[in-house]
Length: 307
Image (cartoon, rainbow, N blue to C red; front, side, top):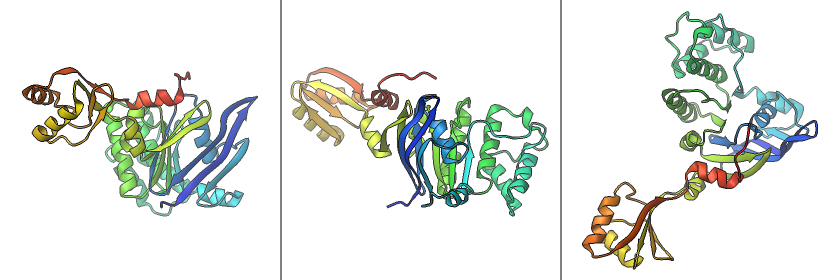
């Protein structure tokens, strides 16, 4: 059983009679990547700001590394690296000089931490180029470098891939995997880009209008968004036996209404049709079915949220 290193219990945040968060409970386990899913305005950033101590909850308790008293939280937050909203970096300084400034300010004794962080985010060759001249992707990567420079135990990222091009998103995804596998970081990442969270996270929390609607593992998510070929035939059991013998298909289910669901060979529907035809099995319909991650999210949240 993985150790729980972050726990939020009954977190509520109220502004002028409106609840931005309503009794939210989440747990973060050591060594995992937790995907926090919600539309803009759902309450993701508010919870992350409470966890990192930027704002206080109206009610509820945050525990870090088993401590929830003031001193314990203060010490625990020193073990958190975060990238929430825009990083406070100096426009006229280079990447290295920005990180060196913060290394001194934060009292990190290891002078190599700046170079190591720049290497991980692929910014070692920017030289004297000023931050204000960076592209959006470069700025995001430097913000990540600042967050990981002190080798935190927990890394908290709020919508880190907003505005990035596909190559930048891929690089960010690879960085997260490296930090988890090589540095042993535990990562809490929020996003409304569901397809990207699906590629990296091991557990998920779905939030809407300040309420945590559901938590599930990656395996549970895969089960709920499982794709399959729906084959309508007169005798599904006979069709399954033919496909198993000719193509070696083993992962299937027979459903009512003369339906056979095949969970493999999704890209070989032509072979499946040819096999069934060779066995004189008439196919009434064949289609690929199953929910996408976005479909599943909408089924949980119930409706599209605004900003």
